[in-house]
Image (tube, rainbow, N blue to C red; front, side, top):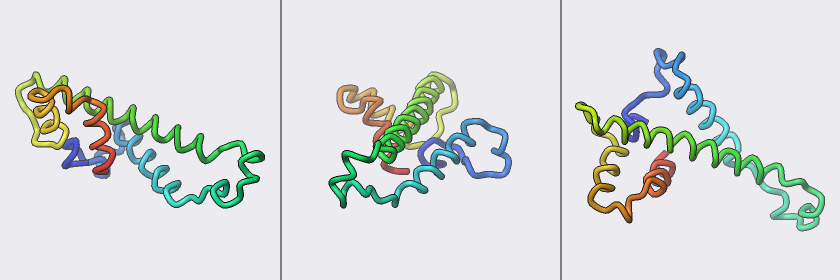
Length: 117
């Protein structure tokens, strides 16, 4: 996260920050569900029986991740007007967005950020 956003979310002094707490919980959930097997892939009959809890969980995690990174990108866009600009991946992508706005949209920056993490 230091490279991407310019913050460390795992320092001891970050315990009180809500954004850091959300990030740590989100990453824990993502890694906890990353290796989960979907039984519907192996037994087709379960597609009729199972209520799709795993798919719902994956969609919910994707939405939460998208919202978190969208907020981070918005913060960087607002800070860009300020005096001090940190040397982060998001800031570099936002500077590329100025020269190629059709290619480097906020959704592309969001996706690249997710892939890096």
